[in-house]
Image (cartoon, rainbow, N blue to C red; front, side, top):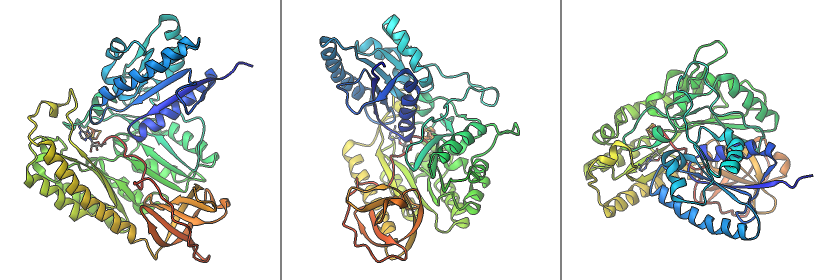
Length: 472
Ligand code: 5AD
Ligand code: SF4
């Protein structure tokens, strides 16, 4: 028997990259690769990069410098290590990476991961291999499936890609350049994936895409389906207890999506709906094509059909030209909407985007100050939202044993971690939990009907939800 080769993947950025990393592992498994947690014994190291903010490519080059040392050391010990750069920096930088860093063997863009085995073979014969082509961009015709099926199910909750890319061209954003135009997967393939995951014990599916509610995949009736219609269909698959989707654009919220929230209990009442700014002037400069009032109206449409719905968002502070008045409008919108949580970022110019050519007007100090004010407001809303769960009985989908012995952890509809003392048999079930306290971001409670647990506090990383999806 041949010894398995080992692949180590280091992922940065959004949920799409987390999903892509798993898919790369699945693609390499038939080649005899198994995953390793360490760089040192890896035969193949993949840096799955993100380009959305900050000096992403410089970080990649310094990481590659470190990897070069490990690779050289391996070579001295007679062991060959290959290094691949994947993700959005690979897409943006292309052959420049190979030119600048001799340690890199493969550069692979997000649309080409299914070719990794061929790229490895090519690197072996030619020394280097690069593939960053976008697939032919004919959206409704015989498109190759941009994201082939997930092969193995892991855990209780799983992502499924339904679309990739974005045509919105917000002026600050690299996604349309690194992930390409919006492409949706055919409905039948998505149903197959979800079916297979559900058969393997997955109870919660999060449909992901940079602009997920722009989804328009071909249905078996030959017509494009909306995300709302897809949710109705997926909810019929036995075993699927919860459906989520991320990330949505306010302009693509149609009636079918709102109705899905009204009609389908499995569709969770928690929507990540980035607005970026509360100032119409800045929204215009960002090319968002909606106003703050449009956004608030969209939120109201959701709230009208499900009063328990909650929202999270993304914000950018310090966009070129943002005045104190513009920033106040953002704070005012946050107060008006009242979020269960939100991500906020300092603007960072992305090379090649229109905003990168705009005169930057907000100093770093002012950006820091605005970010702190915004985060303080969002944190207070998040704390109030979490505190409101105390004394209530809420449904929790149990996912795994917690660090504290005897505790099982799951998530509420709003992705809040919830801990109870219980038998591991409850993993995979949605059960009502009476919440009795809040420990940082985690809810502590007891299964409804059982005695209060007084479960020991549990500390969780300071975030209630998985990392924000890049996009929308
Ligand atoms: N600068 C700062 N934040 C950005 N984002 C996207 N591009 C930039 C940028 N150039 C943020 C947006 C988006 C989230 C994924 O990242 O808020 O919604
Ligand atoms: Fe598209 Fe979102 Fe980027 Fe705008 S911010 S271009 S909607 S991915």
